Image 1 (cartoon, rainbow, N blue to C red):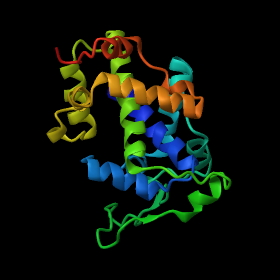
Image 2 (tube, rainbow, N blue to C red):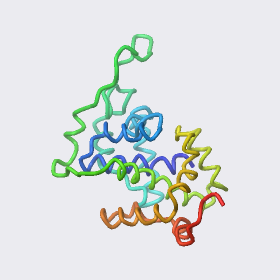
Image 3 (cartoon, rainbow, N blue to C red):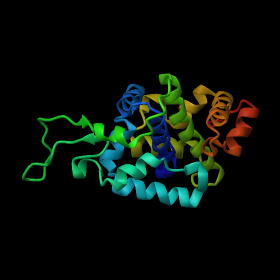
Length: 220
């Protein structure tokens, strides 16, 4: 459940990066939202050797909705696996002789990542749109999980995301937050993103479409 919902979020961060938005900025937006770390820091902590393979498996089984951005493949092929190799999206302090992290040094952006990105794309995008694109992808996938009976009720999603990913508890959980935004807004803006990017990954779950039609909520 957590992987199903988390991977579209991480993928969307990758697509936004490919459009020319810096990964440091994307990470900061999610930190400001309340996440314990940004998506690129999280990928470095998980390890791209593991994360990329899981992402590819989900794309293979779920199709274009879980399409993996090319930047992840390029970083994977460089063997920049994150903290475990001291280099990922960030440069991490090397482990000391006892295998511990050197806490006297901070991670730094890996500027070599920029050399893997398309030079022609320099998008102008608001923080709000960046946040919405990543959160809406998670909400939509959560709706698919409910529709497919991967879980039984919205609370399963919210507990899983809070405990499994650190989704900010003060937001009430992913689907509590979705209810605050409203299904109509989420559906409308997701369709706008789909039209703008001509991307199947924004295809809406039927359950979410029906909620939008009746202005319904995940929590009834």
